[in-house]
Structures are given as structure tokens and as C-alpha cells.
Image 1 (cartoon, rainbow, N blue to C red):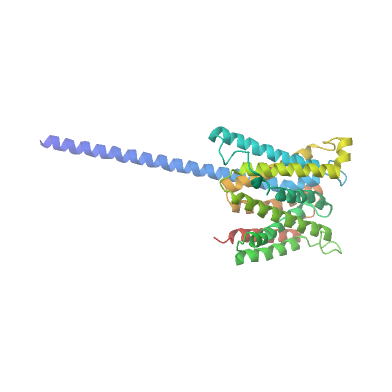
Image 2: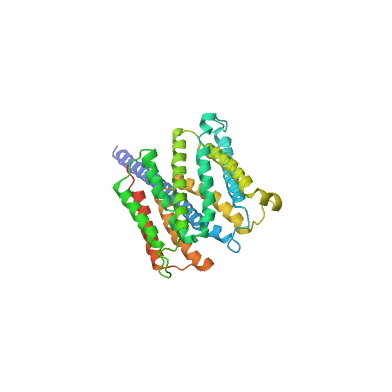
Length: 346
């Protein structure tokens, strides 16, 4: 009896020890799995951040680089048309994958009603004018200056959010707007000439108009998308890009019909032009990826790094003079962009 009691106690000790070990192994596996998922998320976030930074910084560089002897040999309207076409194709590819995996539903089917589609021409037209202006503004501003001034759309977007969507802005965000104006102005100071600013008045006017067009189009598009939140974003993007293609086709007829008819659709295109078109199309996809896989602070860091990266690359490609005023101004702009993001009301 005594021997059996001792044996039973030993068996129970061994069993509990084995259970403890198996529990420890399971916990280790869970921890390893969690660590693996966390590493995957960080890796994905890093890839998206790098992609957005490179695409944002190279956007203005590629536009300037695509010029020959100070002018565009290709038709900018055809380039914009191809950008919209590529975006439309990418949306269709994404939808095809969704249909294959999930099937066709009311929320992801392309067939729609007139009431849903009739709102897309407005933002498509606004983006048309904004995208055309971004080519002509480089007659008055260099690539780094453009990268700084394009942040003015943060102010227009914030104010239009307040007016159209009745969204309140925090005091920190208003302070960020003031800093943004100061940063843009400081970065444009010119100490090597009698002219106060590097960018002339037409350049400033075009930058402000672009900011207003971009802000209004962005707010209007967000209002459309949120009106039917269950609707697949790729379907909504598809119809937006379809109207973008239509308006750009009209722009080709009005502005460049003779040139396209006589010289051909792709006349003046180079490898840099093709890269520029791919860049414009993929930039929108990268922003969507940021919203899905990362967060808004990633977009802030990407914007800040892109400003400095554009300036550094422009030093070697376009003999840009990296002045103290530009460095201080871009730093202030980066801080203001961060304040705008961090000051959002919950």
C-alpha cells in the first residue's frame, strides 16, 4: 500500500510536470506567433512608408526631368489620360481578385444607378484642372519649392472640412495651419537676389489654386465614399477614374487635337515620361495602402522626408541651391504637418 501511494504521487508529479512543460511550449509558440505577426506588420508598414516616400519625392522630380529644353515635348493631356486609364485598370484588377475570392455582391458589382454615378463628375473635373496645373506651375517654381507649396492643400482641406462636413478643428490644428504658412514662406525666401521670394506671384497663385482644387476634390470625394460606406472602394474609384478618362479625352480634343492627330498620341514620350505616368498612378495606390496597413503618422513622416529627399536629389540633377532658409522652412512645414495630424479631435 505504501509503495502504491508513493508510485501514484510520483506519477502525478510527472504528469503535472509534463502538463507544465506543454503549457510552457504552447505559450512560447503563441508568443513566437505574436512576435512573427508583429514583425510582419512592421515589415509591411516599412515597405509602404518607403514606397510612399519614394513616390512622393520623385513625383515633382520626374515632371521637371521630363522636360526638354525647358518645355514638354509630349502632350500633358495625353499623359493625364494614361494616368487615369492605368488607375482604372488597377481598380479592375483589384475587383477581379475580390470577385474570384468572395464572389459578386451588391457592394462590389460594377453595375450601379444614375443617382450613385452622377456625383463623380464633379471631383473628376476638379482633379483634371489640378493635374494640368501641376505641369504648368514648374515654369515658376522648382521641384523642391513645389514639394513645399503643395502642403498648402492641408490648409484648404482642413477649412473645407469645417465648412462642408461641419468637422471641428482643434486649436493645435489651427496653430499648425499658421506654422504651415510661415514654413512655406520661409522656405521661399531668396537671399541671393533683389526678389524677396524664389517663387514669383504667378507661381504662388497657381499653388494656392491647386491647393483649393485638391482640397475641395478630396473633401467631396470623401463625402461621396462615406455616403455609402459598405460600397467597395475599388468600384467607387473605378467610376471616378472613368469620368477622369472622359474629361481628359475632352481636354485632349480641346487643347492638343492637332498635335495628336499630326504627330501621334505618344509623340515626345521618353522613358522618364513613362516613369512619371507610372508614378502618378501608383501614388494613389500607395496612399490607399497607407490607410489600410499603416496609419496617418506614416503619411506625415513620408511627406516630411520626401521634401528633403526632393531637395537633395535636385541638387545633383538640377543644380538646386539648398539654402538655410529652405532647410528651416521645410523643418517648420514638417512640424506643422505633424501638429495637424496629432491635433485631430477624437
